[in-house]
Image 1 (tube, rainbow, N blue to C red):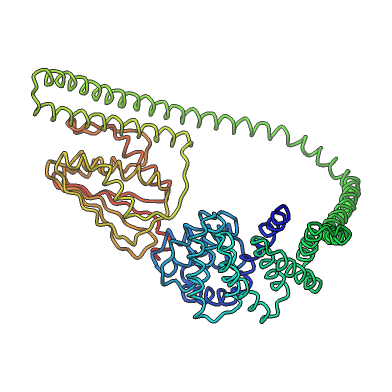
Image 2 (cartoon, helix red, strand yellow; image 1 turned 120 degrees about the vertical axis):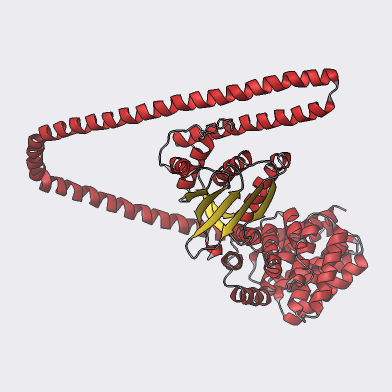
Length: 580
């Protein structure tokens, strides 16, 4: 029993990995031609082209990045199949088999590389020890590959099926497929693979306690390994023969095979050492050369110092002469900087005082309104006046939302002023963002029975910071709702232009404003302004914050409005290449 365990252990360590990784060489030509053809067909899809390029170079991490970018930006079903295939093979080679399985299963049944995909899907679930599913996918790959008439690829599939049958203890089926594998390998005259087939059959027979057949194939593997260049194959074959002879009691022969195995092992180690020594010598030579260069630099520096000594002495005298002028100029400059900083500080203090005044007043109003509403709410609960109770709850919600928006704007305004707000620009799908904002404000729109329409072009992509864009859209939509009457209408849409900017319009049919008010709102200053309409609570902080964030995103803001005829807030942001 110990003999069988030792031999089957080598099967796990040596034979099983070779079954699957050898496939990448056999199918590479068919796969490479297919992939390169698609890269030419879809050359405008840059993320896909980069993904396939990195895949063919076996740069798995870069393949994962660009295939995900392609999946995120495109909806082409064919490219999606190839991207999932790239990701599956990348995860498989990184030995992340669960993720590999997920990606392979996302490809469609019509995928052109399905035979290879199903083979690796079988290999992945075999690594996850799901033998029944592994057999299913290997069989499916076999059925698809027979049409391709590719014996090299079929050899790997038969090997996989035979191996799976061994795990399932279905030894007759395993023998059938492993013998078929051996036959195909012998036809191709691939000595390395014939050795592998002999090793597989030997392990199969030892699993069934058919020692004579097992030893026969171990011997054939050993004799054939003398003709291969793979040192690892030679070492494993001789080591297996050592175990065979030990279990037969032929310790002298076993010792000879064991010594041979150790020699091959030493050869592997020596080969690694040779490379290590060569690398060390190279580094040493570079270090010596660098040392010589450093010495030359020091010598040149000393010569330069001697040559330039007189020059520096003259320079020192000249510096003494102009030193007084420089000190005086620095004093004048420092005075100007201090004066500028003082003016800026006074302006910031004025802004701070005005901000505290406005915000504290509005928060006090909101809290007082909430306090009064809660008192009425208590009374309504006691009197069981449910109609008024529902109205008060909605009123409390509106007051709380208003106070939260004010505090949120205050936080972002403070971060912006102190330059602590993080900006990261990227390509943003405008329609999706407007859809998110609409969802957040659905309760307020329903509360005032306002009709909302998202007419933004689904092909519009802009290059902005996502978080700041959301803040701008929330504030402008909040203002549109605030200044709209019951049963009003709000529409957000894009206007096609031939420039590099995307034009977004937020239109309402609310109270509107005069031209003087528009000019005041668009004025380029950082101070806050209280709205003149006393019935509408607001600090003006939201619009000021929006203006500064639009400016940081290289955007522009314009306003069109007339009293009692509604308002158009017109935004322009840089387009991304997708709009090109």
